[in-house]
Length: 423
Image 1 (cartoon, rainbow, N blue to C red):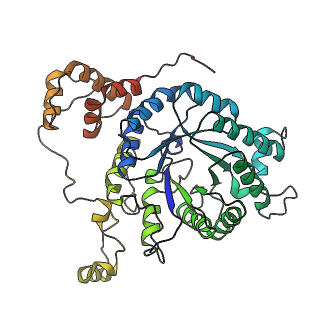
Image 2: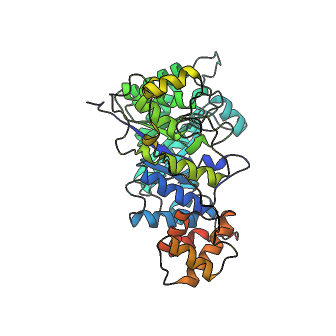
Image 3: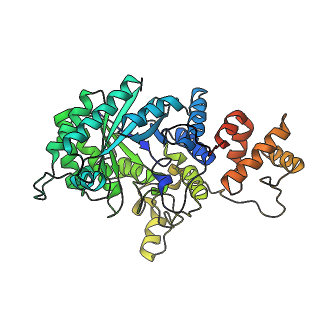
């Protein structure tokens, strides 16, 4: 028997993860990642910036794919500033129906970003106007982000946390139609006990689902995400945890997707609570983590939770002896649970590929090996060439299959026009 309220996962790799300095994903790679997240049973992907012109084709193509059932039951949600102008731009140029609105609540950011031109009441009014605009525009769900919530302090700056203001913020959002409040530990400042207490108080006072968005600057991202979510659950509301694949994100990253899943299902006291969204399929972990590593051009650290090359390696004599007697002596979970196969072997010898400079014969050979016979070879070759140019790396088998199956959407995804279209 599990808890009445549940914890759902909202992956933000395609929004926060792609903001990792010096690296990023192509629009095609973001699309494949959305497909993998959907296969994994993730509740929602924060898949991009609908107020940003170069995202429009990618966003609308992904929504078209979702309408065809390609994304399963996963929601695709956009991120904008809590500003009515961003909402209007979203509605004008995209088909987005789920939206998260973000604005800072801490005094240090209110002062630092707006130069003392606005106060906390102004923040509430700006947020309320944006929420109302989103609901009036027909958004099916609206989340409101309290950026830097963990450093929200009263005017007297006596180092107390100011949940009173966060409660006002959440109540105002709820009154104007918000469906969730995102508590952002933007600088990874919280501790597990403080984030639990803050979220629990807000959730009890407002009775609205709480979303946790935690950064890893002090190494607390996963722990804070889990304990913050438990603060919401214990207050009688659902919780949502923001994750990124392989923990990608600004500075030291965000809460790692696989680590959060394992913490919610394998840690002390959690095994029997069945608190995680039952749609989540951990056996897809190996596939999505390795794809993200290739797409971001960042190898998975050997000690990465669950999917690192040393995650199931044992050398110490005592450990090896214990493992050989009973794996539960030194393992909380097994490789099969994460979809790790013994057959992860790359082909060697003669290899023919297709890509930016490939031709028709090579294309036929590659697709034949994938079990695909193409009717529109020249069109697919053109898309493959442009996709390889777009990615700036060899295409994976799933990317090639996707191109063959959804050529119209691929053409839209690959189309980026730098000419100014609209404000």
